[in-house]
Picture (cartoon, rainbow, N blue to C red):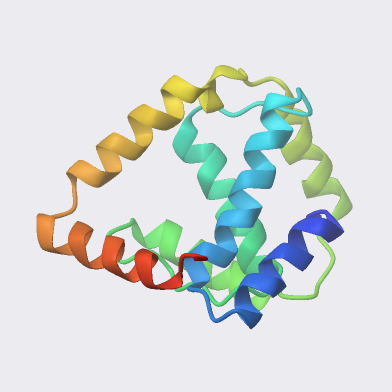
Length: 142
């Protein structure tokens, strides 16, 4: 379950009219913090981000499933969206935690996050990057 502060920050973002991905960013940030403080690990940076996005969907953030992902990933995202407000299964939750605790903590180092961001940006075309930068500039606090 996400922390109360994280949910509150995401709600604040929603009230301010920020995008769903910005609201979900709070959950990703929480996940990264958990890994950094040693609560558990992650196999890769992508996995850490995916866990955060999954938590966001289950907390009620209106995130659409990824368009260019596998069928399984899209279906899982749909299931996460439908699970809003439901408590996770104790047995599955414990199994997930146990598996994540066996993983490494270097997945969210500054280097790893930088590499992931760079690779993700490389896949987008220039017009798309420019458009999102302009959109971000509009919502930035003055």
